[in-house]
Image 1: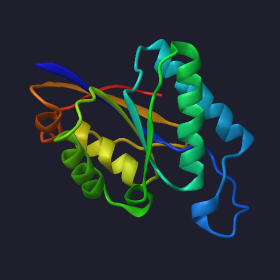
Image 2: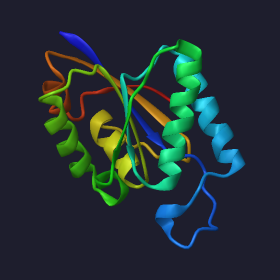
Image 3: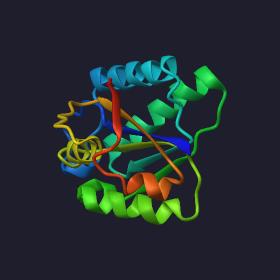
Length: 164
């Protein structure tokens, strides 16, 4: 048995000054909140092996800020992968992506960065609890399983450790 961890993070506060929703950028307050969440992740020992993010501008910024802070604090290189399917995808799309990925990758701590309402629904399904996420919130979930694939099939059994 191995411990697997999911960090389900919502992007930071974004402005409304872009012509398209996809292009909205983080506000200064949003950047600061993401920095604080990343520092808190570090203080709790929750360092992702990979960050997988929506490719919308505000989630790209959130992933880059998170990676920068964690790399500065740990000297660990954390790869970022962008997924267009995370932008308007449903929680089932995210789960399907993770299951497919788990066949060829062995990360034990994965940080997912995306949007509501999908992220609140995904966290709620995994923890079997009603979880409502605000901008820059990160939900820390863990479970013991033989493989990441097994862990991902154990919906409703993940332990909610904390909401940052």
